[in-house]
Image 1 (cartoon, rainbow, N blue to C red):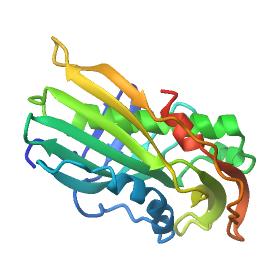
Image 2: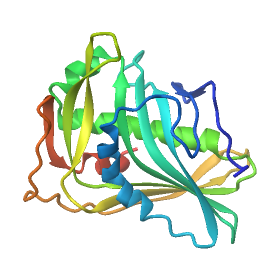
Image 3: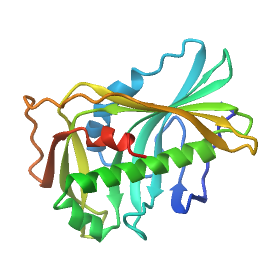
Image 4: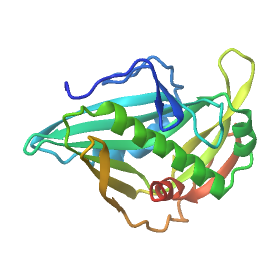
Length: 245
C-alpha cells in the first residue's frame, strides 16, 4: 500500500519523543517477550472482528515504539500494539483500527515505584497518555498528504484485570515491573474519531463517538502469576481512558 510510509528514524510528536524502528506486516526488530502473546490475544478478538470493509483492502502489522509520556519525563517505554489500515475503494476513505497496547520494557524507576502500588487514577492517566501518543503517530506519520478523510477506531476488550509482574531487564541483573492484562469479561469497547483535512492541510476532528460501557462481571475469577508484585481488580480502565482524551 503505497499511501503509507515507514519511518526508521527519530521524530517529534507534539513535544514528546517517539522513536520507530520499523513497521509493517511482520514483527519489527525490537524483541518482545513470549508472555506478550498471551496479553495480546485478549484484545485481538475485538480488533479482528471490526474489519467490515468488503469493498476495500486491509494491511495489518504490529507497531512497536519507544515512547516518552508526560507523566515520566526522561523515561522511555517500549510499547507494542497491533493495527490494521484499511482503504475503502468505493470512496477513498481510510480506516485505522488499533488494538490494545502492551508495555513490555522501560527504564523508569519511578514507574516501578508507582506500579508496585497502583491506583485507579494512576492507571487511567498512564493509559490515556499512551493512547494520545498512538493517535499523534498515526495521524502525522502514517497517512499520505493526499488523503482527505480518515477514521481512527480504537477497539479493545472492555474488562481486564492488570497484574504488575517483575521481569529481568536484559542482562543487566536488574528487574523492572511491567503490566500484564488478564481477560475478565467478553465485551469490547470502541472509540471512533473522524477527521478531514482543513484549509491548511492539517487534520481536523469533525466527530467522535464512544461506546457505552457495561458493568464488568464479578463472577469471573482470575489470578495473577506468582511473580506479580501488585494487581488491580477487574475493571474497564482501558476503555475509560479512550473516553478521556
